Image (cartoon, rainbow, N blue to C red; front, side):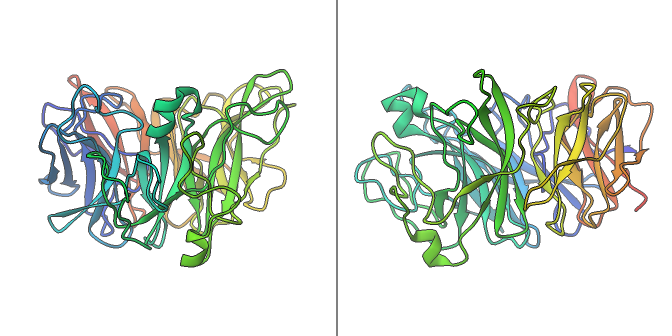
Length: 408
């Protein structure tokens, strides 16, 4: 293993798609910590030479972070906080947007319109963790709503959305915080503040992952019969063409003053896991992880406790059925994970080391040992050629970037 950044500051990797397509550069931001959104630059480092380049520098009091990379082109997606923030409009879950940086030019991914009548294809709040689909055509994100946050914060529920390349979208309203976007953005999850206990209803949708190019899986918080939260796995089939993305269903795509934006017609979420009666019900939230499909889109991986209470990797088909326990470790998996680009293994942190497991047998192989400090559990990411795994590890009080060869 080798350390590839050395400056006395934090280097923050996103949980997936942090590599350029040629497997030469890792993109990162420079937040002081994962929770403090005060970084001003998006950068990248060459894993062979250690050369660092600034991709984008924020201005006018704005901050940026959570960068991901297009699977084939030198395009970088990241969160951009408000410019000229003031006491009424500062960075928050519902005050942020996605932007695309390409060859020194920056464009808005999503549009915002917070004034009635709201604009179809525009959001009314903040998008977060923007990830390209495998073919680079679409972008998934999580979402919080400014309009509902102002109306009643209990209605501002976390949801999952997709930006589709059918813009531009120009807001109808003239609020100074409105802006246009290059993509058409909609929500694809459906939440309710009062899920019926024991039902498939959810009050939160999050930690999504692409399943091929036309499906998206995510975690949804259900309620057990006794009212306890149980995170379960859900999936949606996405529209096939531009008309499908722009056709409203039973509720307006753009939402109303007291209702969240709604998915396009025919976009229905389906529950894949049913764990309410398990000894340890639900997908785990610690460690935080994002559900991930293999490149073949035949298996979705997630973290859940076994009957002994140990956090293991599990697999399920996108069509549903009984989940299969993949790993049988004696101790918890300690991190988010990702698939090898060939689909034969998955990488993660186990026993404070970088490890991978065979996707068929679950056999674990340790790739590192003797860490100075434990690897961060926030990101363990394969390079597109499968040669490296990258992660973050503290050195002298600062998060630095590390890589190790995978041997496959």
